[in-house]
Amino acid sequence: MTDFFKGIKPVTFKGTKTDDPLAYRHYDKDELVLGKRMEDHIRPAIAYWHTFAWEGGDPFGGRTFDRPWFGPTMDHAKLKADVAFELFDLLDAPFFCFHDRDIAPEADTLAESNKNVRQIAEVFQKKMETSRTRLLWGTANLFSNRRYMSGAATNPDPDVFAFAAAQVKNVLEITHELGGSNYVLWGGREGYETLLNTKVGQEADQMARFIHLVIEHAEKIGFKGQILIEPKPQEPSKHQYDFDVATVYGFLAKYGLEKQVKCNIEVGHAFLANHSFEHELAIARSHGLLGSVDANRNDLQSGWDTDQFPNDPREMTLAFYQILKNGGLGKGGFNFDAKVRRQSLDPADLLYGHIGGLDTLARGLKAAAALIEDGTFDKTVDARYVGWEGPEAQAMLKGKRSLEEIAKRVEQQGINPEPRSGQQEYLENLVNRFI
Image (cartoon, rainbow, N blue to C red):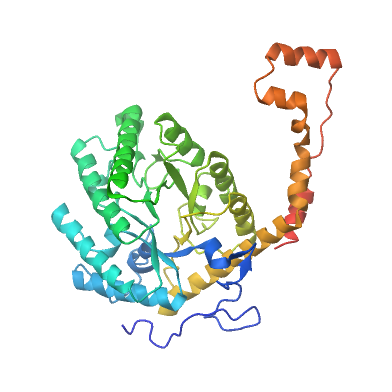
């Protein structure tokens, strides 16, 4: 044990009447919601990068945190792993996620860098023998090093493409060996800064080939987890090719990947794309792409991805409605891709953020379940589309009527439909009753 969390006791569920800030008020992992344990609905994970690797900087200022594991050596990386699993155990977290560059320092060669990552993975494996925390997903950092300033899979230099592929191979294999349920491909710089020097079609072909390579290797090593793409519209690039879920679906469909890849959807990225989190989940659900979730939020007055802990139960109610209607997240989960604020310096702040986030998710889950169990919401929405259950409507929908036949029926029957209320205000009020 290290001394970093000295004096802090394990966090437990104490209910809504407690005034203990280091206790769960709503998140009771064993509470049954629609016949399933709350933890099994949410499958919460702690993000290694924001929680242990982020130094507290922002676009206008550098490091504010002074953590004992900050440093370039493997000893620092091992201390970071010790502290990480202490936090996992304190929070009773079932999962964690990592990038390779979060867990081990980069060396002069890829072989040395991969060796460092593998050494820390062995530390993880040993710690997982006594901790209940498991790996939700792993990923490779293909955006921080200057070699990736023009992208990784989409880079104009084929040697960078090859380097990135070799880096991903290592992390994919480690994810498999650690029992990870997913592997995430986040294209941090898979986009462009200017079209003046960019062949968009060429770069799309490269990115598709890269994903095919990952899928082929996953099958070769026996990895049974999901391969996920994480949409984001821009930042750090001016435009990224995985702009939103709809864009990702179009890309996957073009290259025959829509049955093999799903999406890891982040709240903050949805916001940057001028969408709601609910929207991205609904689009992913409609296309069969809903794989996993990054839980966070953005500051509405800041122009960048602030990655704050979720604190809006209404937003999460609408999100869980989509997730529950999807049949759950399957192998996915809710990764807290969130960080404490740069002024939150104390060790306890790391717990406060996750406690509040989990309580917010718990409230959203229970509200969405109650909304579904009540049934009024679904009945109201279904009634709006009931006309499509008729024989002629079904014939049109299934391609059994030509445009000429449809037009003829409208003229012969004198069809002249009147608009009907969408009842938006009623439905907004109805949702609020369950929050």
